Amino acid sequence: MRVRLSSKGQLVIPSVVRRRHGFVRGTEFELVEEGDVLVLRPVRRRPGAKRVEEVFGCLGEFAHERASPEAMDRALRAHIRRGWRGT
View 1 (cartoon, rainbow, N blue to C red):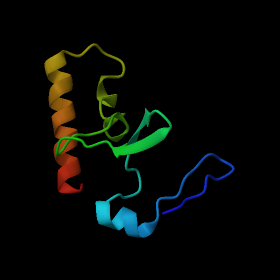
View 2 (view 1 turned 180 degrees about the vertical axis):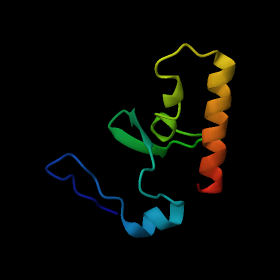
View 3 (view 1 turned 120 degrees about the vertical axis):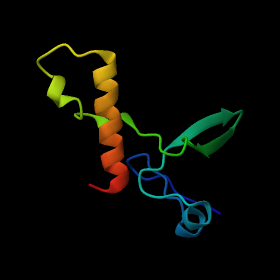
């Protein structure tokens, strides 16, 4: 299967391949060079793992005070639970 590099350096993965592998918007890949061969490997996360962007700002309540690691941990866990419930 052939793909073409865009002027912005982007490759399009054909939809049939995306569906077969379950790749969705935002899927991250690792690019591995093996000699003259380039290998794209999807980055697999633990179930329930969150990216920094997904929890950024959830500690806003501590913006102007020092908080204990335990308090920050509780805030992060509460944020993640809200995300799982879709609220």
